[in-house]
Length: 431
Image (tube, one colour):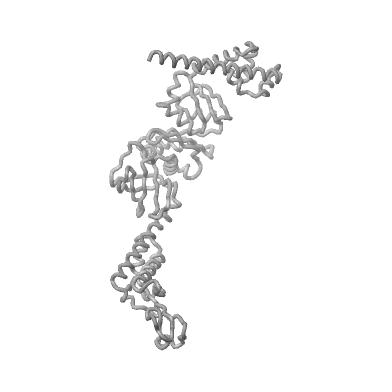
């Protein structure tokens, strides 16, 4: 039935990238299935591919008996000894089958099994090829579109660029070249799924690694990336070599390296920031080009109040808050940007709130202010021991001050609630 297969198996193995052993196993399974289909499931047989002969050999096994009751499964001792003189009753005798007798239907069944196993093997080969390639940048060709997702071919494999992983306003047509980041590789019963991304922060990192030899060699390290894909990004870099400027390395001669990345991202603006272990300095650099007047750091809540001159406020915040939002993400700190005038007004109001506490005069208020307690609200958050550490304040007095601050803040909340209720009543009356 099947002869001279070695050449065909080798050819398919090369073309499909599938191990020839898998193809031989598929072939043996297909013939086994065909025989079972023709002769029934009880038929005992053995199928092997004979490489020397270049054909599939099928041996049917029959029980050696005195009197034959089922010719499909049994053979007489007399007939058995013609094939093997040492045969005895109860032996299982293997007889080579003429596979030409299988017929057209059985042959078609064998073909279906082979094709099914071939498709499985192709899917497995694709998964094995890509499962360890997460994080790589690949080039593909746009093949088709599926509910907004872009299906691209990567050689012999297909990959999907979901809608959420596409950069807004980017458009592609069939046949276009597309470059993307392998975000995930999953194995399903229907085959592997290769997920691509052009919005992932690591796509930007990988693009810089391809363009900047110092990053590839490990001299310059990308510390953090924050992106609003298609619009703007901030990337923080550091150098292990004091003679290598990390920002300069990423920018390149006349901006050639960063421009190559910008071009790939269709004009996405990229701010390259030198990383600094001093978080206050790092935040100031992250908010560039705005100039920072001062920062107030709260380590416990990882928040930072950033003060800028009035004319720098819009620059620090950025269009629709983009600059401060990206700076917050690239530094992993919550940033609150305010102007000098707002800051000074807040200081005045805070100082006034200290003076409103019973038993707190100007001298004591100034002392509290200089010790970092800049408002009545700050006092409510203080520990007794913190206040008692101030010269001239006992623990008892510290407790009293905290209680007065709590009462004051509660009265403010009550006043605000009354004002809101009055406003609501006024609106109802107008209606």
